[in-house]
Image 1 (cartoon, rainbow, N blue to C red):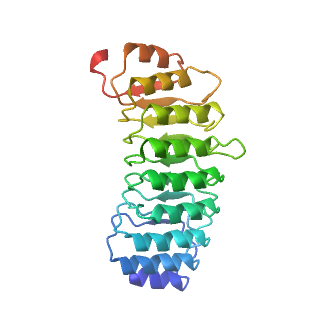
Image 2: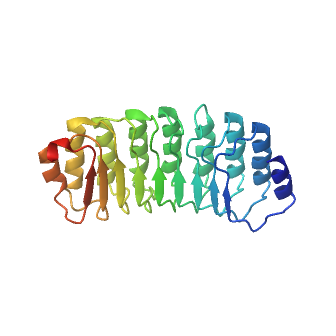
Image 3: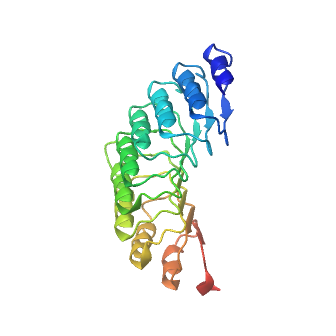
Length: 264
């Protein structure tokens, strides 16, 4: 990686559009050299960057976030950071960069298992609340632990009526997080204000928001005037038969549910 970083630093790949570094486990110093090269404008035309499953520490990720903040990747459309630790202050640096408009063309952002807790989600939501990521179509926040308060922060951000609020978002994956009725109420309130108007797929697998939270969701989805484009919703708790009747109002909408032993 050190040799690669040195090569791109002198302009070896000025036209590169896609870079896959999945499972790259080089020492932090070598990855830091690579990100510093990025920060110096080494790959100005890069459109896709996959960093999932890489061995990046907090210091290295902060260098990467600073590079983004310096405008290193103005054409980036896809960024995969799955299984990368964004805790311990990293998400705050990353969120500040995107909040300042560093990734205006990003369409796909995947943050699965990034150790995003309450504080990290609040930082990310603050960036969203500024109208960041105006081109985003796919957002994966699955397998994190931002909880009730994190969900409230995200909902408040997308509910701001004066800003775009992820208007282009088509797929939202919130699966394998834990938030209850209050989080669902906040999310529903934001949708009711017109947020996520392009949403087509909503993944809520393995979120135990309980019967009260399910009631809120059913009420949201039976309102035909909102989420007009929603085609698929994925749910992961034992649904009551009444829930299926409530959710099944729209023949245009497909529902997947896990598990379904009561509904055989």
